[in-house]
Image (cartoon, rainbow, N blue to C red; front, side, top):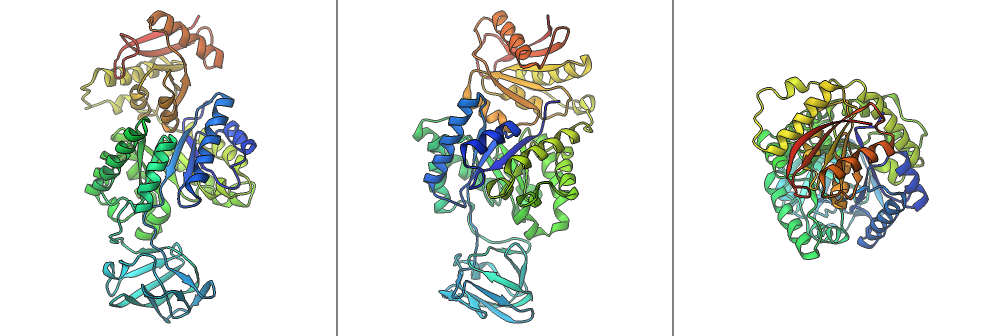
Length: 478
């Protein structure tokens, strides 16, 4: 059984060796993530080039995502490297402090005193330390420790309920965005957008960088991780201005509380699918496999539930970047996805009720799904330039694999993140009958179909025009 759900893995010290990456690809890796919160642009360029080289070597294109750091709001440094904050003690966040101690610490984000007021709760180090704001005096935030512990250098700060005014794109992010696009990445993830305006700003910068460097436009992913971003109007505008969203459960859980996240995950995936956008579910999916060779049962359930929610992709962070078992983690995740997908329900008949299709290519795409489902086809083949037809197909559950055959290498890479779409390189003839024979031969060569099987195929006439899909054909494999 082909796996529909895609796997994204972060490159890092544990996975940046060519032999490890080859094994990760064989295990089922679909998209590589480069985390711009760590390392230099030169580090990421070297990793990008290595991925492209190995993809050419193994004959399979992966997508590459640049994940921008965003406005991480952090405490400064301590004279001793850390301090022990005791419950009930006073503690000051001070923009003028250079080296901290048990009484106060500096701030990287100098505007934080303007964003908080008495009564606010500040969550430090992923919520392991909680401070209650008592007053703000100039550049000093006077707090009382509600939940204490060890606080070390440069730990993050979140405000419960959100409301911090830091922009989604810092100066570092703008420079990293330009550098990533110059490399030729396929996706850029924008951290901490508050609303659609943040994504529209990122789009303007990204499109300008693509034009400057003469590369295809990248797909933009909105990382939904602020409390403001889940408000209905804000979330709808973010989805509208993005190509896909990431359910970034780490910072989101800190701002809205852990119990709220599972229902938000389901709502975000549903809204994105309805808007024909892809979704990525991330954060601590296989966390225990950083140091253990098998996942916990809770992690297995977490990955499986994300699949059943309809996510396009599941993502690994430290598990593949610094963990002991990057290849084994991907193998385990792939097995979980395949097993969960067997339980998916297909509701194509009801999916299409009350829908209005205004484009010919969209109508052909959804007609192909309906036909393949009712004819029990073995495969759907989409001859595509831009990838639009298989993308529309991928928004609906169907237990029939979708093969996107394209001569466009950037389309292959972009389709690597869409659910149930297998992108294949094929230099298509401009003669339609010849092209159809090429498709049948390619799928037989892969073992995807055999004599007697049925292929539902979509194609445009004349051949080679993006957005020109206008024909649905049923092929009985000889």
